Image (tube, rainbow, N blue to C red; front, side, top):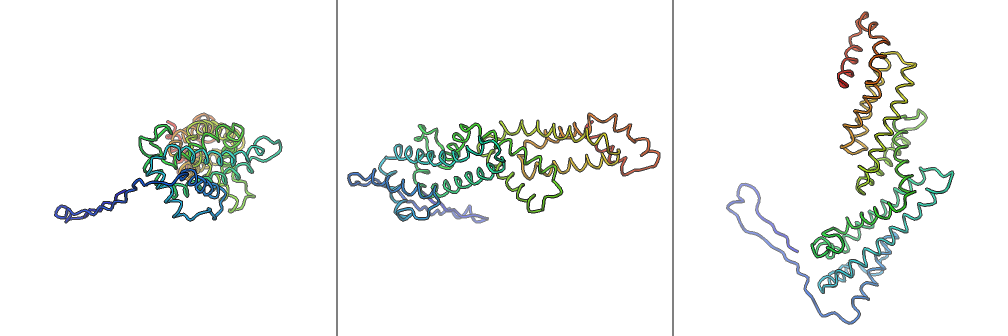
Length: 324
């Protein structure tokens, strides 16, 4: 461990002094049974952290010193294996509680989404605490080439995310309902039922943002979520455009299309990943404008010209220019 401080600014070239603080962890003679006794204390702490119990069984300083001692005496491989197995056990148990909400007929997917958010956030909180408590193991072993047997170098945090992803993907029903639930939340955000209060809309968006972020961190955004998201949006706007073409005037349709494009762009930037925006907007323009260009002009283009409705003509020109 080393902290290096060098001068900054215009005088940096003239001032080359450095302060180095080294905190070596040196091997010591350990009493018999130290490894097993230490792991028992650390396991109790890990269990308490995942259970959100503030009583870890030992002080954080004592636990940290135990981790240091185990790492200093070349016990990292077995120690790391035990720790990750313990994390896997707790993550698997937490995700298993979601299975009934994915397999029981009649239960709302919204309940599963809410509980999945809690499981994800609890796991992130637990892994954040473990990263601090097991910092020597993380920095001196897991992040080094010596941890190749664990797929390393890999941080303890990334190991926790990988465990969550593996367990989540094994629960196919839970994953399928979660992805379908995200698509339903997107639909609800697009429709914006007039009966929804601002609080309901804000809560729906917050949940949607959390779940999209989770799928992104689990490397499940580009596949399977994004292709399904684009297909779902295509169907949504195709259905909406067909309904509007039968009832709306040209001016009302163009105003609606312009508003939809603006909303979808804002939704992408606030809730989805940046990689989705371009393709999603192309699909929205296709369904709202491209496939209806001829019928839209027949709806009232001549009327706009004859009456010099310049603002609406400008809107029509701008929207049609976006779809070539």
